[in-house]
Image (spheres, rainbow, N blue to C red):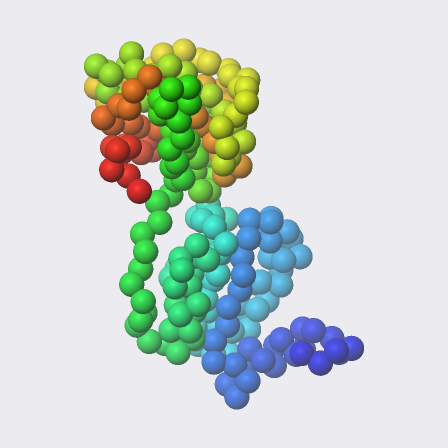
Length: 224
C-alpha cells in the first residue's frame, strides 16, 4: 500500500491483478461482523475477488475463535477457514494460498471449553462454556444415580474459580428419559462467563449445554 493514496483503488488492483495477488485472506472477529462498514468492505472485496479471479481463487478466513455460523458470510463459510488456536494455522494459510492439500494434521477443536478445578479437600469442580454463542438457560447434568454427588451449579467469569456466585436456580431437571438429572440456572453462559459445577466426588459422566438445545456428554476423567 502506498501512503497518502486512497485505499480501495489499491486493494481493488491487488485483488484483481494476478501479478499482484495469489490469494486473499481476511481476519474475522465477531465485532467486525457486527460492523456495517466492515461488512460493506468485506462484500466489496469478495465481489471483486470472485468476479475477476473466479470461484477457484483462494479466499481464506482467519478466525481468532469459533463464531456463530449464522453471522459468517456465505463466501467464507462455504470454504475451509483457519482457527488461530490451531498451532499449525500459519502452514494452513500457506497451503491454502498455494492451493495444495494441508501439510499438517488437523487438530480437533471442541465447540466448548472444559476445565477441571478443585475445592475444599480436593473435590472436583468442572468449568464449561461455549466457544461461541451462548447457553441460556444453562443445564448441567449427571447420571440419575449419581445426582447426590452434585453440590451446586452456578455462573462465574471464565478462567478462575468464582469467589461467590449469584445464581438464578430454576431447580432440578432431567433429560434423556430420566437417565440424566441435574440443575438448570437462568444465567447466561457464554464465551466470557462459564458454568461451574461443584461435586463431592467425581461423577462418571456429565452433560451440559442449553435447555431444549444441544447437550454435550463426556467422561470428565478421560477428556483432555
